[in-house]
Image: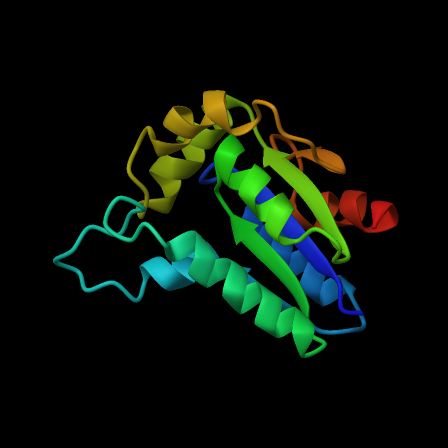
Length: 159
């Protein structure tokens, strides 16, 4: 059975960088599936959000299921709030899924947003207070003072 790793955390917490570090660390290939891939498909004149695309979470899960069904290991890189993570966990019930909460302190998130230049300033802050409520993870990884490679090495022994 193929493996699934779910990285959930606020914008700018380091998820995508950790995925790259994990991919480099594993002998077997792991595909990087991220919600942003789907938002990138939306024409620029339409706002890419769950209000305009209410079923996007189902599309992401269908894609993940299909990849898994065909024997591919997947790392899902996403930002989902508590109800969204509970949805993901319900959809992946019975599969080999490992859940990682990726976080950093607020000052670090703000600095990363500013340095990236491709995120709305304040997005991570708006997500931070809600993302952890009532959710269960296999491991929490604080990226405030860690490189992506260090974070990946913290995750790997727990898989």
